[in-house]
Image (cartoon, rainbow over all chains, first blue to last red; front, side):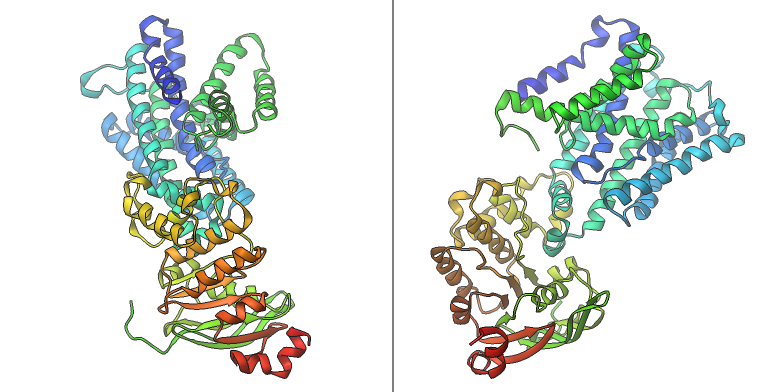
Length: 311
Length: 251
């Protein structure tokens, strides 16, 4: 049962370029990017019990580094991508040391504060970041000489990266280390008594989440060919967090479904209602009330009985 | 890791812990030989669990020293002490309710192995861990429940999973915090013989209120009251001591 659902979901990702128009292909690309981002956030929120409200930092910083290096400093896309991901991951290592001094609400506040600092810098350091104007006129890379300028070709590129990211993060959480992580989430004291180093387990996960956040940021800037401080903002972090919780944290499918939901609402609803955020809020409220564990766990319970939820 | 084999498995010197103005343990000095079975008794609030928490590293003492096999571990984090051969159980059951019994015990095994850092192989790859976990579950009489979730089993069974998790680690020093609490008579007998069968390489410290059962297991007894050691010595001498009767046995 479960695998049929997974296969159907996977197949649905192959369809957009076949029959959909450019608008929908682009929307699907955005969903893929948001899905990688939400999946990386879910490593922290769902599997690590570390609720972060500053995950957009990794998306934004990776995007800014790539944008600056390619547009200002004449780097090629390949080199810029490597520097951008390495830089973002290093930043996650530093931020992790600061944020992991606390857990729970304290952790959330520190991640929020750190991301606000970056957002402020992106706004104010206008000689470097161009401030509120953002950095425009960026290009997409052409891996192996294949241009990614058409919506369909970019979609295939994003799909390959997203599939790989999904696989890597799925492997991570179901590994022996993943078991350590879930243990530390549920009973940190017990895990320490058993010989696990809770801090180190959390820190490694934090860095790994930062790495994939950076990857989603690269795709984000490739897709938009533009970067603006809002990509670093709390709203951007909160939207992803909303998606993770709505879709079902601590599941692999949840963040993908949640990210899709947020993006579809944003794109469809904003065409009809100006205050689309209100609609998003209502939908979120409905989900929390009706299926508090999220869409994916609720659906798998429906199809497989009360014990069907995958962990 | 074992440069020498000192006589004492565990040495505690002038241990003091206070929560603000409330002193919970003070001037505690204990020396526990290798292989010894030590029972810690005392009225509620005597500081027994706080003492355990300091030995295991859950709490840092304000002053004093803790030595494991001659090494000063006072500044070691809890996880480091586990790698030094220290295991414990909790008075309040601290398990992973959503996971199977087998998974719970496997975590105990994983904690001491380098494979806990393994990021691409699933836990199921390590068949030897599962086999070992099942063997330990068999030893505590829970093999038939190995595939059940902890949340689905009875309280007495959870107590035994606590024990299995610690025993699986083959500790050199084992701290048992009220392993018999809340058990039925039958379960008591089972757990008692289980504790009695712990190999001599393991030094056992046990907090227990059920004197009828615990006295049979103990060789030496430490009586705590108001965070201090009141009486300390061989079982019969401690039981016969006037102060024990006064403080604890209430005769």
